[in-house]
Length: 374
Image (cartoon, rainbow, N blue to C red; front, side, top):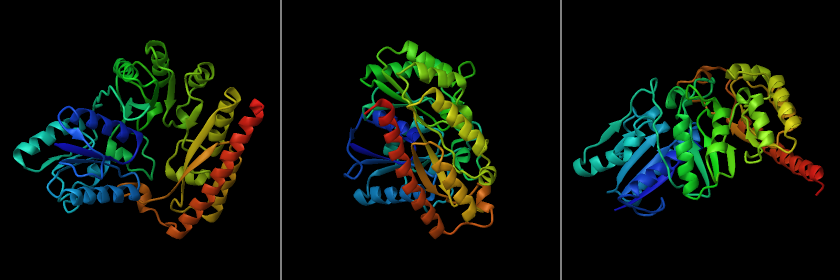
């Protein structure tokens, strides 16, 4: 029998999809999604409306490729929408953001019974589901160390989809890292829903990195997938400065360059606090690349607010931007706010910041070349 996996969404989903592949490959043959298979897994995403739409499209695509195939759909979109039975009518195995380690067994169960399986529970009380990988499908391997979020930004559905924060024990992280390095991966990307808030009760994020550098032979590079400005400690900056094995790149979401909008978003910093920390990092690590996420068109974001964001970002010293239009998500406080921004205005603001991102990147490349004398 053949199986195919379609993964959507973040690096955490990517890691989990690789684990599904590793486990199913013990019994079945993997083929690319888009080819005819006997089993399809759609690892879904719900962080944006586009991601939700893409999840539905991939479900329809799998059904069209092989109407008789076993279809499993899992992760965040399922967690948030599973009660809408019409969407998942053609899904045989439905799994939310818990019980994902059971997916291989659940598929086998369905193959025997041909009875629809739904495994979607509330996520308020979650444990970290360990998924040990020995190899990855690319040179650079992701290593999932954390899951869940306690932040509850007013625009974000992830705490409702993924549940509260939890971390893999440091000893297990080290064990998994050794497995991946022994499998040929010399570069690891530490990832999670809230990576910088890693804490297993005795080891924090910076302490974990120190252990990885000291205990994993053959590890040549560590990258941090994304981290909040409030999670970058002086200790972490010092470690990055002094150990070249830590990639000199940080992705630090800001979401808005306007203090009023940041407050409405329930972000725990001001633009001044954000910029001061960026300046401190760059003073210690001059060649570092710092990128960010920005959401435009948040409810109530006026033209003046957007201009503040654009002006802030233009002077920020950031190296490039990932720009997203605000998408209303049910269950979030922002969904109920008045003064929603039109889709046309959002599109215009995305375009403006995309141009700015290109300018920032060119400026960053030039600054690095000048500093290094190229």
